[in-house]
Image (cartoon, rainbow, N blue to C red):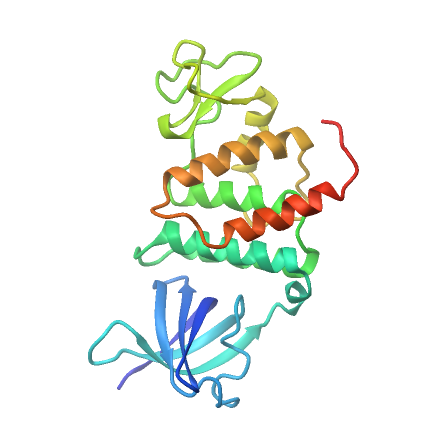
Length: 260
């Protein structure tokens, strides 16, 4: 039976019986895959810590004669990302990022650019913890990669220029709206500066999370707009989101007040 080798990021796992484990992982060439690791909890030689969440690995696998689960033969650990495991906010944000990739990518094969984005995001969290910009940068770049990025600098319905002051935003209608297309139901309002900052992010290197700094206004308004855009494209609520939002809300309450 032919054995294959894939670079992968471990997204989640499920213990099966006393010693086995079902693993969901993301690869640059095959997209999302699930595999069965027989004896994973006992065989330190073949698997070790390589099936832990968020680990960067190289997986040896074979295609089964029947069923969808790949047979995982061995895992080479590349990076366990131990840095993020001592930071609860970083763990929660990493879990959210992995679940978001899983939901937006679905069964589509081959997403090397998204694999690189997720790798850079997890590496940043492991090295720097949860920075204020990390979530928004990741969300916007991921939406852009999968073709769901909203219109930012022109009206999503008529392509006209946007007003100089506050701009209406409705993710369900494609994004930013001019004064003629906006209605009272389009309740998200963004400053032009916020839209400009979001547009600049799309032209920045996608592996750069540490050197981009956004104003509190952009983080607040842009975060609300991009979160609404994500919800439009999800088939179900994300399981990881309530816990992440709770942690971030508690963290915000402990910070001194900032001015835009």
